Length: 203
Image (cartoon, rainbow, N blue to C red):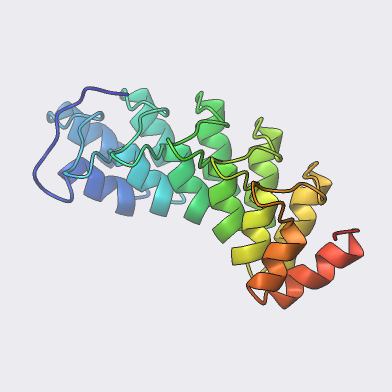
């Protein structure tokens, strides 16, 4: 984790630019003017984390890393830039972070991973980008939950279920309570997930 200075504000100038600009020259200019690419806001988040969350520009991601931003920094909740990107952004940004050395299976203290974030909220393309980059489709959190279980419970897109299973996720895996992905889908009334999991042999 970086020891960069922490600001009392929500957005540093570099953090604001990292969220909004598609011009890497803006990033380089701010760094030359003294903005610290490892600087943190009051929640411990860096500019690279917010770029990962909301900026689809690979060039901006690359400019931040070239300026010294660490792709494996973690915020106060132990979320990394890759975890931020996996929730909201494009597969291109996910791939850029992985190519820069982001650890695909980094975990928070509760066992949360980038693939879990993607499974709960994002698209099949992001799932595939993470798995190709080394993410474990059968990794578990502290309760034995897998990415497939999270997708079954929380993601309305059944194509995410299919992408996870195609990537090696085990349909029959059980958590600490012996619940399967199909159990989660039924408990959350996720009809699309139920249909796909039954077709894939879920029980």
